[in-house]
Amino acid sequence: MGDGRARGRLVTSRETAEVWPADSALVSRVEPSPNHNERAGGIAPDMLVLHYTGMRDGASALARLRDPTAAVSSHYLVEEDGSLIQMVPEARRAWHAGVSRWQGQSDLNSRSIGIEIVNPGHEHGYRPFPPQQIATVVKLCRECVERWSIVGDRVVGHSDIAPSRKEDPGEFFPWDQLSAAGVGHLVTPVEIRSGRFLTRGDVGPPVAAWQQMLASYGYDCEATGTFDDATHFATLAFQRHHRPRKLDGCADTSTVATLHQLLLTRP
Image 1 (spheres, rainbow, N blue to C red):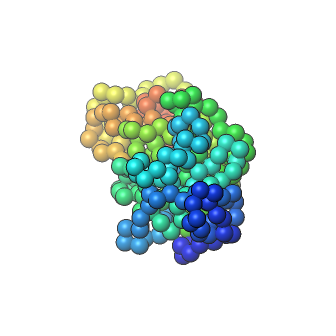
Image 2 (image 1 turned 60 degrees about the horizontal axis):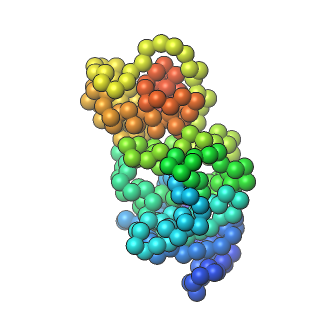
Image 3 (image 1 turned 60 degrees about the vertical axis):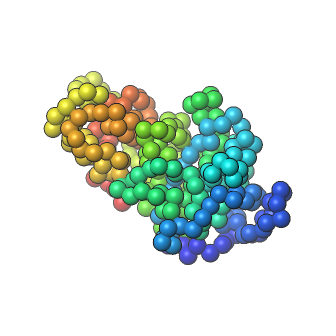
């Protein structure tokens, strides 16, 4: 586990006299954000949360992440050309996760490192991520998980930890490339076939069993036995990350079997 001390070379922001050491040699420049504070209880980060910016361009996203009135930030911003900007030291608590839960824990800002990836998102023309951008994301994520001893099932997307309100980094994000680099937890999705499935409005023990599977992996899902909106969105978030070929929020055989394999192979 990392000790939180600064690493890497000194980088000076072009817009401020503030100077602090970047945590990674991958960083092109530091653009400090005022939006950060101490991690609760002084805990070290043990999660990695990936986002897309969901804005029209990288400059707009950077401005918002550094705007004190916006009260949002992340540790890193990865531009489409692969350049990397650091805004908050890894030892500090950036404000990127919002109201969220994973594996029964809240205040995920205190527990995580946040990486924003420039992409317009679903609202402004969601598109695949450029190879040079993903190459930087993979290298940075690998550094972070090694520096802080982050286990695979705690490398998540924003939609995993806030499924009812977030979609990022979305179905185009190549989780398989992270997995190939030893980052995250992934299995080959089970083939999609016709058959029975669970969906909104269904009730009974099979629904409760599916909800318990989602909760066991980490999703904020209560085993009520009713396939409600929260269950739908948790299922959809799971599909975006682990079975992106078909996104419908239904617990079909492929979705259930894929999660079963993840539970059997979790770190």
